[in-house]
Image (cartoon, rainbow, N blue to C red; front, side):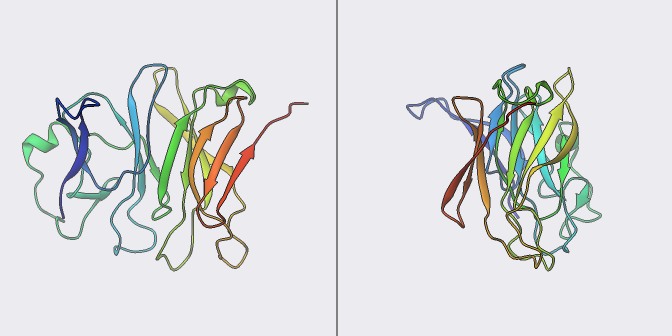
Length: 206
């Protein structure tokens, strides 16, 4: 296992810096427009069972932090390879727990913060994220769009499904969400790489 991370650099490739470490497989990231903090999804270790370890939604409080891999396989679950091994102090001192532990192996990918006016006020500055769906779980899961609400300090408080229907009753994927973004009118668009489609989700109040 390697220790992945996040790197920043200028558009010309200069000033390359390692900002964070301990990231395994991140596919989505976005800045919170309220406090400018950077958030990212992270997919975690396979082969430990259908229900473990969880996927993650993370917030970076500042540069130089460590997000657990490879000592943690996802959330607070230790990997088989590093089970029982002490975590080096230099890592433990800068460890950041995930803001949200997602369902194991749902493959959390693209994400964004909602700033539109079409949806009700409770969705303002909430995080919408796509779950692509498991590739090897015995019981399929994911294939949906999740929404995570934040408190007035910018921390996650609750996560729940926002849009589903890309998996039938037999557990067969009819679609697999990849990314979710805000359209110019405040609606939400979701890309699907199985159906080769883009869906627009709109809201009409009573």
